[in-house]
Image (tube, rainbow, N blue to C red; front, side):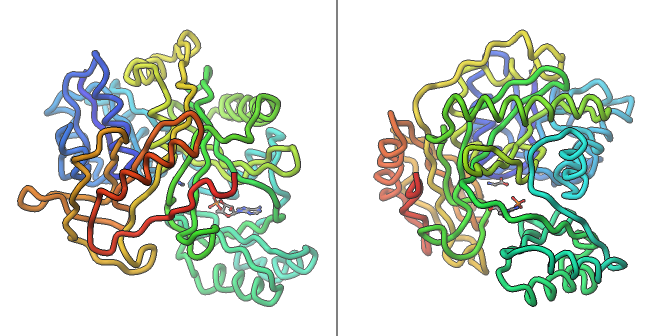
Length: 423
Ligand code: AMP
Ligand code: GLY
């Protein structure tokens, strides 16, 4: 089979690395890809939202399946674009159709979905410019901290948590009246603050059948001890040690099953990955958010633990016979540490030469923000590379990653030295 992966991060390099191991693979394309995907597949300089160019590529390279990495093209309806075009309508796309992608595209949609299907989540109300005063009154009725969420996609910045009531009101006004996040904050969800430990569960579904993939925990803040600004993710561990059998059974029965059944009941076609962000409150799992894709850097620890042939697994999703597949998971722990550009997540420079990563043999090096310049690999983004290792526990896995990171150099390189500190 010829496969096209859309995206350019560590997630897409990991998917490419895994697909390369498939005996069913003929040619692999990544659009636009990075220096890492360029080493093992054909990079094509096409943006993930350029649907016409993607169609052309799919036809000229006889692509048999498209795997969508990031949420943007899904929320923009790439799956529907394929289905509605007779030239490419039969080519499977891994990723939900637009209507179901609203689970990530709209926080209010996701909250309503959870309420309808009795999936445990924080209590909430949503507000628009017209109901600003009701929003103030609702904030007054809550105890701090106050959780405000822009309804739409805001590049991971749309959630604001504040301790002070006056600041929370100001923030609500900025979002609704001053369009702080543009159209994404035309509606704002205000919800109950949940206190607990976060983890993520990944599900692969064909719309009816589903497989629960390994759990993972990511480290979002730039600074050690979970301090400082939010990033796309500075590291991840899988499995999450505190997600024992009893807790996983609760997640399965109360969250995963009603989610997949709810999608079906609501006639929301879904073939792809569901990323469920959870928080463990006491002993109970509650949903913080849905994403309609894999996470990054969670992919860098979840996918390497899957022992099945990924192409067969995704083919089973396309053919809707996932129920017939037996999932095999590596029992070991995988951990990844993200190397980032100096200054990230604020302004940073690109174009720094990266050395030493070729000499690593007992860790997996997944490129994120990298590109080639005159046969050298240079930095091309805030998150540059994820170094993944296996171990009998997360400490052993992290030890390998940290040892190998010492071989890698680029000007301004930064990373968190405390991944897993809270476990
Ligand atoms: P989200 O973009 O929905 O993942 O939210 C970003 C982060 O905000 C989450 O990873 C949590 O750390 C935090 N968060 C979101 N909702 C809540 C909530 N209801 N209570 C406490 N923390 C939350
Ligand atoms: N690591 C979080 C995300 O991919 O959204």
